[in-house]
Image (cartoon, rainbow, N blue to C red; front, side, top):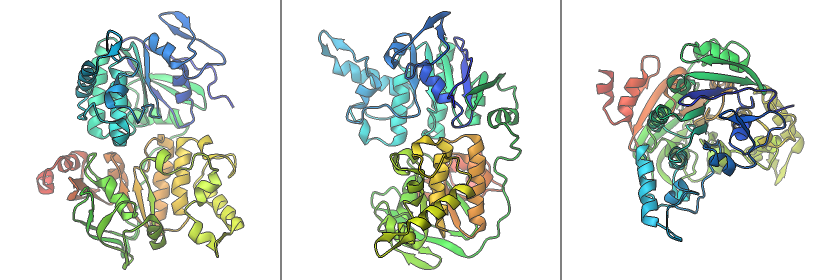
Length: 484
């Protein structure tokens, strides 16, 4: 199967052009050809009417094409300044002018509202800050064409807004921008045209924002999705997860208390650094923490992920590629990695039962894979995420903690994942859903907890809350003020 088949795409100066499609539609392949990471088997890339061939990204950069790819390309052992100005470090004669380098890097970061010391090593930064450093490197490069391939996937809403404002400034200066994102709201906010790919082929190019979102989604997935969340009423049982005075040793979470009932989906919202990520890690025993946690009335000690699994807690981390999948292993082994205790006896794994359960999970969650023996990196992002979800859902967990469960997957896969989450809730699991996408929480959760500086600042009924109220509390306001 061809990754791309006869695709035409054009970009005008001073235009933000969205590229949309499901995972595996060919978007990233097209962008890699544009910025020199891949060579096409057929067809041409023309700049100002002249056909150009790029053997590597450096040649594309020399022509003014700068890209941010889905995978971070930073050098973790180098400083922020060295990464921002990679290949463009200022010199004073034969030596690098380090004071000037740090001044330029700091200025590039400040233009995006990023507050980080340019002397710090990139490897010591959070994923979001690393993404912002990558963005600063690209937008400060004086490019003619800027390619952003899922550049906002790890950014908070505030950081995304700052980036979109910067893109508008670049557009006004005549820079052409190709914007790839699974977040449709971002496409409608910044782009004037959208080109849609499906299965490596061109579906069409439409104007934005004139084209209705439902029409754009239909072009992407090849079918109508009338209700993305398909929220349904699920009976609630007894408290499955009870948390009292939970605090982490590093102070990221302080004195947090709440409960989640059987069949209930509770969302957790907040800005980057509010403690919601650390809350999920603490409940899975992955970071040192104190406090009382009960799973269906039985105390659980926050000591290790193994104990969390034994207590019936499943955990899907926010960084799928770095913390959730085993890239060199097969789909079957990635599913079974959490099933050792369930399938093991006297130190031996029941391989036949492992295969049966893996096959059943693939069927139940519609995981599109050539076979259980296929390497997981061969799958699209949406199917990789379904493997990670199926790993825990296959255990029949009492509690599932989901951190950014739909990050980096397309709208069609999102709709499926939302359905799977509700299926597990219907079976009696308690779901704690940590997400930076407020529409997702409002569309799926029953209640939403809002964190600020490590504490729960407010709680909302998802049926009556709105984004403005939640955002107000996430910035530090009192919940009663937000409702008023």
